[in-house]
Image 1 (cartoon, helix red, strand yellow):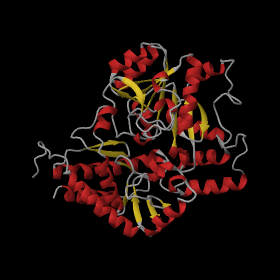
Image 2: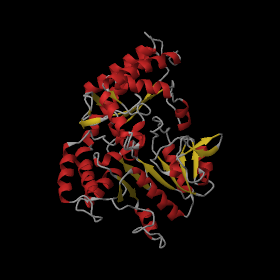
Image 3: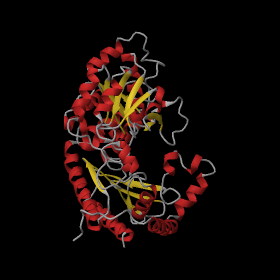
Image 4: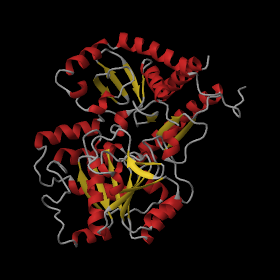
Length: 457
């Protein structure tokens, strides 16, 4: 029996690097067609990919997908993967769910975009209101857009210039949110591409779960909104401490600050996201990715009070070029896909299947960690699971960022990829879809356990 009260140190660096070199050689041999396509694409695509994020793969070049169905991806070299990445939540419904695929085909034959409301629009608003509790909704093309528009609306309503986010948060590609704390100062997040202004002019940043710092920041009375995931996800899963959300809501109300809850990733918590499961009461709620079943879609919901305050602003242009909206937002195809995904795929019954699968995944990872005495932890949020390289789960973004180990993470991703298991190419996140199987979860457990054996031999 392993003594888990005295965990081992991290694996030797030379062992990590040697295993990575071995795994990259194996990856190159089994992904020759992907390499050929990557090299060909380099002549016409920036970075050799249609979107620069697709460069983030551990093998030295990306895997080119031939098709994806249910929770399985097949690449151009004939390799098959149990997919726990699921498009980084975009395919949390599973790939190409039949109901959404049929709806998309039928709607495409009628109309894709007209810049007019379609008959599906009321049903989408009703479905979102029933699920998350906010009564009035707008449709966007992404969660990034939903957050951007919500921030603009909050600034317009309150007349305040700043927003507040939590250290190492992620809310899509919103300029104001790429800010972190460094020695007590708000600075641009490392790697931030071309920030338009120094973020300290637009943003206040505090650590998640730090209520004293939150109260101090809001006391300046210049914060239009707090934009928060109810549990942090994109730096590893960081859960709120007991009472945190009650105090967050109380403090924002006390200081005249709107509260925006971003459920884009935390929708994994359950049918109505963290908000419904834990009775949160935001002024605005944003969501995206999976709500279209793979078709680009996002949305933001408003309380009636916020909507009334917004429409009372006579100098705010909500119907032309005032900074809220987009020509393709609310298009007929996205709205039709959202209706089907929300009412037929992402049902309460679906979460009754996916959450137990995530619990199984969590147990497998925890068991392997304990067996080897690795100084790691695993955390679950509904049907989302993530392991990180510290003995205890982090309590804020700063601690989560400090535990990050790029070389170790790269090895684990590549090790899994070479054995038919796909997790997110950044961090160690795994997501369950209604189409995920116990056999796929078991495959990950076996591969993860073998990786630890190789690391700690």
